[in-house]
Length: 512
Image 1 (cartoon, rainbow, N blue to C red):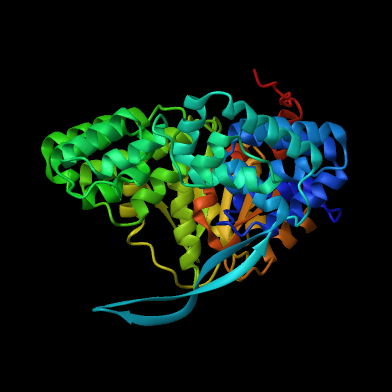
Image 2: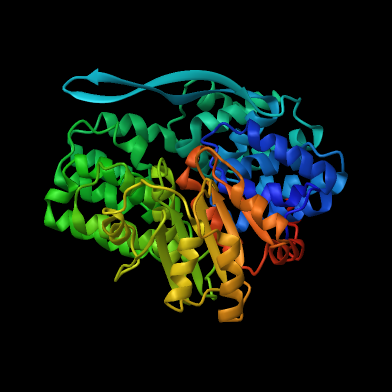
C-alpha cells in the first residue's frame, strides 16, 4: 500500500499496533473512533482478529469498548461476543473505559535525584481521565447481569471467581447496580464469608499452625501467587516449592523477580522446578512474548540460565505471530543523536530474527556502513553485538543500502530505522535504483521513524514514486515491537487487510 495524500485510516490503525499505551488509551481512542466511523465492517473484523493475534491488553480493551458502544447493532453484538471472551479483570477494565476512569501516568521529568546512594530519574505522577465517558449500554448491562446470575447459581463457580478476582467481581455488580444474591452480598459487600465458601480458606491460611500448612491450603485451593505471598508469614523452601508447583508458566514469568528475591534461585531443587516450567512456557498457549521481555529487562533477574530461558521464550512466542519467509534487511541509523535508533534497531533485530525463515542482514550506518552479526538470534546475543555501535557523524541512508549492494546481499524488504534526516551522499533513492537493476528485485520499504522527524527520505521516495510504508513508535516504545511482526509477515499492508476481512466475527453465546 503506497503512501498518498489521501489519509487511509486503515493504515493508521495498523500503525497503532506499534503503540504500547501503558494505560493511557486516549490516543488510541481517537484512531479507533475514526476507523469505526469510516469503515465499521472492517473495524469489527479487525477487533476479532486482534483478540486472537494481538498481545497488548490496552488495544483489546479499546476494541471491545468501541464495539459495545457502536451505533450499528451488528457491531454491538460483536462487542458482546468479544466481551464474553474476556477475563473478568478485562471485563472490569472495559466497563471503566466506557464510563471513563482516572489513571495515574508515571513520567520522567528529565531530572536526576538522589535515592539513598543511587542517582535515579525523577518520576512525576500525573492524574488523567481516559475513556469514552458514556453510560453503559443496555445491551451490556443485560450481558453483565446474565453473567453474574450464571455465576450465582453455582456456589463453587462463584467462589472460584471471587477468590481470584474479588475487586473486579464486586465492580461488575456496582457498575450496573445489580442487586446481588444473599450469598454474593455476604461475600462481596458485607465481608461475612459463609463457612462453606472457598473464601473462608483465607482465615484458615492465616491461622494455620505452620507456614507449610498454609502453603498446603494455598495449593489445594489454587490461590494465585500474588495473593498467597501476603498470607504466609515465613517463606521456607518447602513453601516456595508449593507456590511454584501451583503456578502457571505465565505466572512464573510474571513473578520471576519476586521468586528470585525470595531465594528460589539459591536452591538447586527449586531452581530446577522453575527452569522446567520456563521450558514449558516456550510452547505454552497463554504466554506472551512481552511478559518475558519485560521480566528480563527489569534487571532484577540475575541468574544466567533463567535469563537465557526468558530470551528463548520471547523468541518462540514471537514466532507464533508469523514467520518472515522473505530475505530482509534492517538499516539502522547510527548518525549523530541517533542513540534511540540504535536501541530500537537492536530490539527489532532481536524481535524478528527468531521469526526468520530466510536471510536477515542487519547494517548500521552513518556515512559508512557496518554489518552486525550474531551466531544465535537471542536478545542477549544482539545486545553483545550492538555494544560497539555508537551514534555520531552525518547521515547517508544510501550507504547502508550500498553495503548490501556491494556484498550482493539480496533482500525483498528493507526496514529502515531513522529520523529520515539524510544529509550526505550517496542518497538512498539513487542507490535504490542501482540495487533494483543489479538484484532484479524492487524491495518493499518500511520506514520505522524514531526521534525528531525530518522527512527527507519519505519526501525523496514520493518524488520518485517509490512505494513505502511508515511506522511510528510513540515515545520510542520498544515494548510494542512485537506488533510489527504481523505487518512484516505479509507482503504488504493490503495483504493483511484482506486477511483481517476474512477473519470470522464471533457470535454471542448463551449461558447454560
